Image (cartoon, rainbow over all chains, first blue to last red):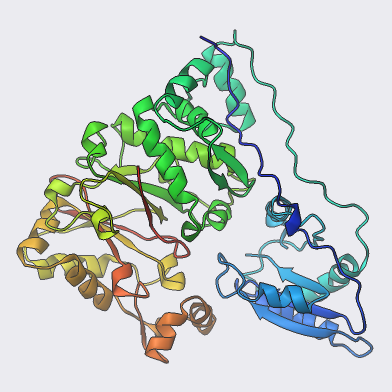
Length: 93
Length: 410
């Protein structure tokens, strides 16, 4: 019998490339989504970012989305994908 | 993204195909800062965020491809193999059984499916848990071949969506899957359900739980500090596998509650964050037993309170008998504990209440501006198992909240 020593590390799943979204060309007023993962203080962090985005001289449409459970899926992910040119996702603890 | 999560965040994004993700990094932590500090940090990060957001990516992240580590030669000694595997991060720090082809083939012979059969995809690396890769990890853990179907069932169970394995693998919480085995396989494999059931001493319990941890580490990539971000972890992350002591239970078996036949052999996985002993001194009535449990369950600081989920109680045989003799069903016990452990909402600061309102909408929707918070969203979410041996003890195991128990047949 073979005494070969086998590698315990799993091979990565392939075929998920379709999940990568190619950035579309922005037309008109850029739409920016702010995705709050509901961790403590993330809302205040994104509030600051939103204030900067709304400062005089800027021209963005802002969409705020809250992921109610930090460790769960984002119920409004389709909305972000359809409406937004950019999404800022705050990830922190 | 805060700096401590940068590597993990990129790994997950890339594994899921989001190769063009841009990251701006701020210092950890964020959650403990005062609001003024958060705003200051946000203001400073803004320019970098916008630069990353609006500037075309200079370099597309490639698909995550790991260099395949060379394996030791067949002539390597057990010590050499152990040293090499430890250096690669493939062990739990304890010696492993070298996974030589001969041993792995014996493990594979205990299961009738092809070695390349995919049982699941393990995050955060999103790597394939094939029958053969699971067998290699089971050999390393010291499993006997006849344990292998139990390990495979456990892997299948943790891959079910409701178990929510991706964040579980990466969280700062000390959560780990606890395996609960029911049915005829318990006796066949001598899986301990009695004395020291949560501790050491039984080969089946020790190695089946350890094999699952190796799958999480080596296939999923849950290496501590790298992608496993547990702040403290817990001893159960070495191995946590028990059987229900159904002979000592006055109630129906755990797997029967989950819809399986009494004579079916099953594995349940529960994402627990630790164990808390509850000792019942001079508590001889059902009411006294339940009062001790109610008083012992913490009033703050464990995940079920903030996220709901399914907190678990393991009653020892003596306490279960007292409750059963009093005519209490499991549902009666759940209801008494559910009501008895309600916590006044005034104990929490407003920010915590707001967080709970988002994570436990059911509780707030049903009770309006509720004045107390139950430890679970529904009475039936409280899980009850009977295990252990002589002694006046119950164990409370908070669970991670964002996970549900999964039971599968072996």
